[in-house]
Image 1: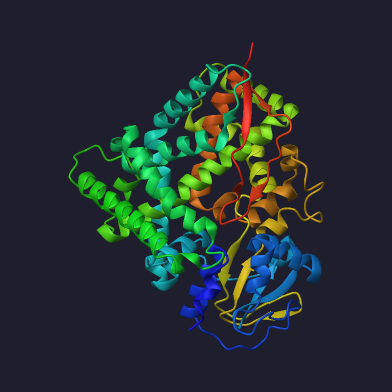
Image 2 (image 1 turned 30 degrees about the vertical axis):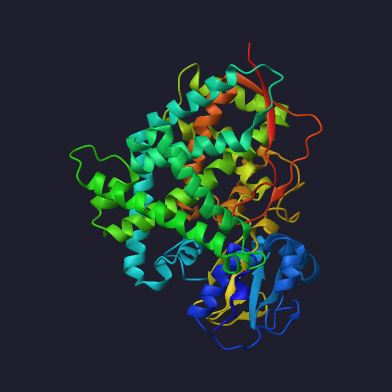
Amino acid sequence: MLDFAIFAVTFVVMLVGAVLYLYPSSRRASGVPGLNPTEEKDGNLQDIVNRGSLHEFLVGLHDQFGSVASFWFGRRPVVSLGSVDQLQQHINPNRTTDSFETMLKSLLGYQSGSGTGGTEALMRKKVYEGAINKTLENNFPILLKLAEELVGKWQLYPKSQHIPLCAHLLGLSMKAVTQLAMGSRFSDDTAVIRFRKNHEAIWSEIGKGYLDGSLEKSSSRKAHYESALAEMESVLKSVIKERSGQGSNKSTFMDSLLQANLSERQVMEESMVFTLAGCVITANLCIWAVHFLSISEAVQEKLHQELIDVLGDGPVSLDQIPRLRYCQQVLNETVRTAKLTPIAARLQEVEGKVDQHVIPKETLVIYALGVVLQDADTWTLPYRFDPDRFTDESVMKSFSLLGFSGNQACPELRFAYTVAAVLLSTLVRRLRLHQVKGQVVEARYELVSTPKDDTWITVSKRD
């Protein structure tokens, strides 16, 4: 069994440990250039810890060894792909679940689709995605109401008022996800605050990435984490019973899962994944989008003009969102520039080949998405926030290949795009967004990239 110290880097590292434990393979080397293990037992673990995150480690790894590189988790080799061309070559049949879901379920101790029959896993994936689509259709007015409430609050602030984006937009996302997932119980702020407290206790341990393995060493932290997880599961089970007994009012995410005849345990697990991942991805997409707009006046004004041209003075509707093409470009560029989800991982279920390199069966292959999203060979001026780059068909093709748009996009990201479009369509038509002078915004790269500290803006009313 791999030493559990291997799990001490990021949540992705926990996935690595789980995969290598569940799918043991021979120790044959792949022949891919890369690092030798720094320590016999832990491989390159300390190198990753020293860089601060797996993403930052991979940036240095690919700078040194090129777009196909290897390193070691414990005594096992791992291959990382860091360019669009190499990702395009990598054929892996393990498509019944997305890597985000697999990562979360590995940590939570839930049954991942990779451990079930392919037919059942595919069925659950379709049910999950369909439930998200249906709750957006059925509950779109709730998103409008929440955006209106937030923007209305901001309109009352004086121009000098500094607005903390992380605090406000995590709150918006939490309300949106809980109400669309579980219904009117979470229209009460007290229920949302209690849910948010447990959510943050769970996600903070995921986000810290077990950098020093301290969760296992700290009985108080572990007890707090387990208590929060148990309480959150208890709330979900309570809502399941409540929704099961309702009549015709079946409009939430959870209702769709129940109608698909999933077991209570399966409904609870899928609801946990959606509430955890949906909140964090939605919040950070909104945070980064508003931040980038506040420092890009020309982009903000171009978006404002599109919103006026398409929507006039009326509220956005779900069927109008696809017509907001520049808004979509802004959100695409937000995902790219922020490196919103910098890592993905897939198991090589059959022997494959990338360039001249053979990747043995049951090798873990990491997609270094954060590296690829800043690759100058793929993106012109990659560090510039430029939504216009997405008018280029080849750019959109690369973006889709990475799983950030089209059919390969994870359902939580598609949900986040809808919430962000509603927020921006309300916010940008009413207010101008301004950066706070002298503020330096740095990212913390975990499973989802988030600002290290709260990010602040000011607003002023449009004439």
